[in-house]
Length: 142
Picture 1 (spheres, helix red, strand yellow):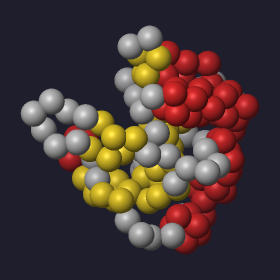
Picture 2 (cartoon, rainbow, N blue to C red; picture 1 turned 45 degrees about the vertical axis):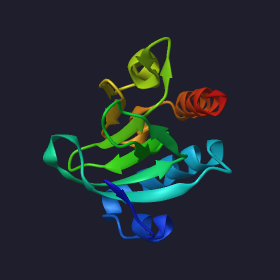
Picture 3 (cartoon, rainbow, N blue to C red; picture 1 turned 45 degrees about the horizontal axis):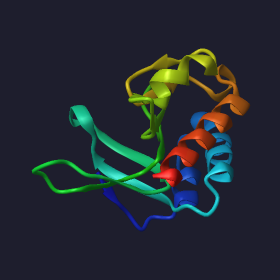
Picture 4 (cartoon, helix red, strand yellow; picture 1 turned 90 degrees about the vertical axis):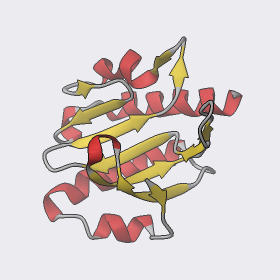
């Protein structure tokens, strides 16, 4: 995955109509919490080999022993074929926040560092904002 210079608002405007409104609501919610942090579109091949476009909020550096560091986002938002995915890169008590708290958001599927759902009506937006706030706090604290 690589950071791009593509305008995130242009990217959102070009999404299929059926998903655009949900993605805009989610983007506004996350961007409000992450205010002051970069909001960047990443594109490329993601884990598992699938082509992705992910809106990344915030920045962090993943240091990998014996490998180059990876520049990544704190929170990511992506539209998949059949669902929307949130990626939370923050860890609390040796557990990804998405894995620890994701099930509290509503009708979602929780992975190690991801939360997936079909539409914004399936999740608690206030809960999402609280989760993103916690991710921001953890990463800012170092």
